[in-house]
Image 1: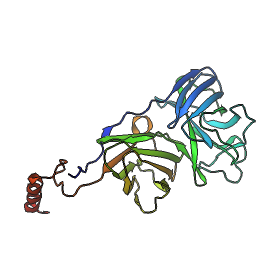
Image 2: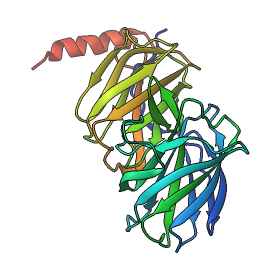
Image 3: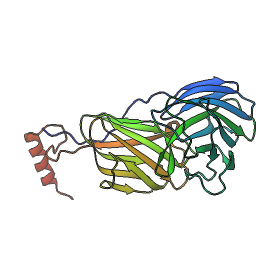
Image 4: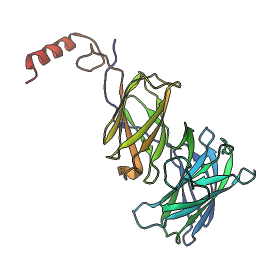
Length: 303
C-alpha cells in the first residue's frame, strides 16, 4: 500500500519560550528558539545571565528589543559578553553590518549602526558551551519603557557565518511547523525534524517577500543533490528524502532583515510527504476507486 501525498497544514505546538522579569539583572535558560525576558523599566542598561540549553555550543548571542503592541523602544547601542561561566572575559565583538560574520572595523562591543537587534560574535577561541552560563550587558540609547521585552538567542556557525538558532520545527503527518523569528537579524538557522511516519520530500518556507541570498543546508553532511528553488517570496526544497526521526539543519541569509511576519514572528514551514503516484485520489489506499478517479480525470481533459 502506498502512502498519501499531502501538504502539511495543521499547527504543531511549539515549546514555550521562557520568560523572566527583573528590575535590571535577569537569569534565564535559553533553548534553541530563544527566550524572552521582561526587564525593569527606566534603565538604559540590562545585565542578563543566560544558560545555554540549545544542546549545542554557541558562538554568539543575539538580542532584540520589542513591544507586543508595536510601541516605541530604544535602540541597542552595544552588547558585551562580560563573563562565560566563571571564566575570564571573552573576546567578543558586535556584528555592526548584520552579515553574520566579523569584518574590518568590527572590533569592539558597540554597534556602529544602532537598531532594535544586536549580535555579539565571539572569536574562534570562545564559545558558550552547552549547559554553561554567560553574563551579558546590553546598552540602549534611552530608558527602557514599560511593556518592553528582550528576546535572546544563541547562534551556531555554519561555514564562516553565524546563524541564530531558531526553534526546532517538528514536522508531523498533517502538521505545519513554525520557527520564531524577528526583524533585525538577516541570518536564521533552523532544524527540521521529521516526526511523521513517511519520508519528508518537499519543504516550503514562505519568506514574506524578503529575498533569500544564501541557503546553507545539511543532511548527513551533504545537500548538493537536493533541488532548491529560491523565489522572491519563498524557498522550495525538493527531493529531501528526510526519513522519520531524521533532522535537517539549514541556515538562511536574507538580502535584508526579514520583514515582520504575522503571529508574533512565526515563520511557517510547510512540508509534503513522499508521494505515491498509484494512489490517484489521495485516500491512502490503492483500489478501484483510484481507477475511477483516473478515468474521470481522463474524460474531463485539460480544458
